[in-house]
Image (cartoon, rainbow, N blue to C red; front, side):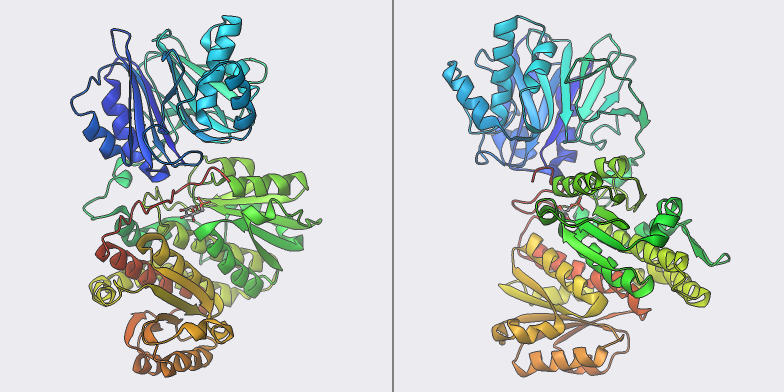
Length: 617
Ligand code: G6P
């Protein structure tokens, strides 16, 4: 959370920074700010509460000139979302400015020491201690700023990606990183550098980048090659140059009203890309490279422990059903935030699998670190290529969904489920718990899942009509059984995230143990009821809702007669094999949430208080 962008070179810094911040707004939109150093040596700092567009309007007529600058979009942690707490923060003399993504955990101690030494604080943020600390070391030592920053950072506990700009060093930017992400882009030969939290602001300027590692700092100086050092001891570090793989059109709305809708409609293509090259009907095989590499470990595995947060945790729940059903390996699913602090038992033969769209989520990373410390083999399922989790795990699989910009996850979820399904099939094959004919049947059906999703998407207008009747609802209940219980959880999460309607997901049969008390004519109940195992049981659950006058929306298999008769609204999905049903049943739930939220006037791409990648705990 929080997005940072910086530029140094011969071009105007402002347009590069402001457009970059718009790309990073998914990381937070509580406030935005820029600091620009103009050619007269003045450091102009502008900040505004709210979105980047507020900042843009606010400084429309201000001096925005300069060829070096830094910018920030904030997801508030310490200090409310107002323009004083917005970044950049600056030192008392106003000559050093800093932007920061992360949390300084010992900021209270540092702040007390600085207050005792006479420093004055403007904001309530943890970040402001950094800039006064840099100033303090500079006053005490008289060393060059980069050395002061390095020395000061050795006193800091927490997570950070920072960029420092000083009036006295107009040709330099100093960047440093611990836990939060940071990428540097190379422009014109040693004369131009770009910095951002991820590659999306850089891609229209350069594809040549270096991902800074934890504990490293870089000095970007006009006319000089990038200098990379270790914060702890100033030792020189080698730089590795990577290539950004983003396609520019993936970062645009492409004619859709919102990124979320675009991403919902991209799912047939995204799932196709996820699965491509990983299934082979002729050889009756599935090949996820990471599983193949650790084939023996997976063959002998005693238990798989999944760690994840949010939507990715729902994918993990589906993995539990899939892997236990097909491969007969015991599976546990943990909230990463709980797992990391509860001294879990990790025994020989346990494999810990992290699922994360961003590959950056702080709790998931910490859960993995714990698993590694306890000696477990770790596996990562991530969307963002080169992300922290993909680099820290022993092996893994990318979901290849392409950039997901809408804060509410859609294509990232279905591609995770696609990979987890392949993983379950491959594990079953390795462990001999599935016949070749069953494997082939699944592979063939997998091939037609994208076209079945296309068919569901054709019902978009019908779903929009249904949505009209629920814009005033204040509660929603989502029910599902088996593989579709996690889909009920995911449907409820989508609705509450973007429409702010309270929604709960429940296993259909559990409804009798509490939620049934809530059902009356004002309670919309969405039931996921494809024609698979336990269909009749779901029919009974639906009858129980109907008897209590619940307003029923049912997701059913094409041609369904029974539930369609009882429910007020019906949405059909094509028939498929039971274990693949989540890939279809979740689509109408995404569309329904989307339309309800849009009709309620909510900002579906940037729901209040949320951020797409949660890099703080
Ligand atoms: C945030 C996002 C969710 C996401 C969760 C986990 O809460 O708003 O959409 O599911 O983080 O993120 P990850 O990147 O680890 O999948």
